[in-house]
Length: 182
Length: 191
Image (cartoon, rainbow over all chains, first blue to last red; front, side, top):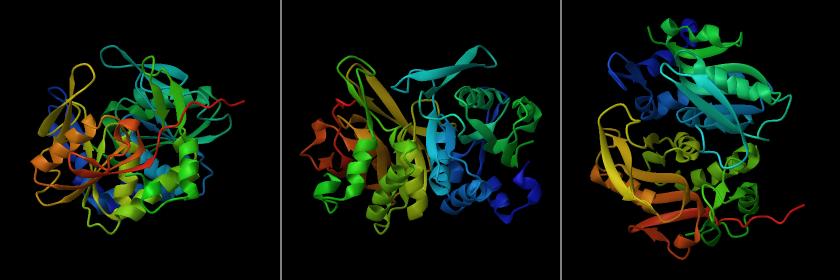
């Protein structure tokens, strides 16, 4: 589901604040830069408010954010809805005992890690990142949470790249995005 | 300066924040007692109190920029920025920011590293706060201060949750005030 279709008046303001940087990190990629959104306090607040309004009162006890841009949006959401924040990180960043989930990149593989004991069985979790492309990273994030017995309620992103069909790679889990980039 | 010596003496929130931080011995290498703030973020009240203490301090200081150092500064900075009506500016490792950047090198124990900021993110004359989870030698924070000053901003203060002994007794870094909530914890002899 996309808030874009609901045309909440805040959405257009958010969309205009996202900067597209061509050919980054390599030729052909139109990079969706959310740092310009963060420079506009009202648009940044509206972004967080839209997610908080959706998830408050839904008994979500975990917000898991994907390194690094998920760390920018996840904690404010977690704090506002009364949930804990759990960072999902690249290998060897988390200091304690971790579980790891490998995922496929365009060329090669990468790995996402979560601290053992951060999430309890039965907890209801939200996964947050700035953008969904192919869905590989989000899928790895969901797998980590489900491996410890949590229930992933939804994945939440600011931006979706629909052409890459990530939405269909989430094992049937719902995806909520604010804007689509065609 | 430590919060307990600067208006928050005896504040019970500080003790809870300190106790929510986990010490992981010998990470990332032998001899280092790593101060792990991920356990603080599992404790909603303590995490909220951390942010609230910073917000209460900075809300009336005319700060328009909160600059957070990658990656753990990203976990605290945005919430503070949102609450005080400031912009959030991520300071990142090389080649992560997509647009035009300025870079500042800093010295590590072995070798050097680099911090980058987007050109145009901060205007001359803006009043800025730098935030990170922890200050040790101050090398990274110093690089952050230099980036902001190079574009003409005024760094009002550097704020960290934890301050290691190297900075104890100093209340300034590169001439800029330093504000710290707690000291590092020793490993618990618990259970």
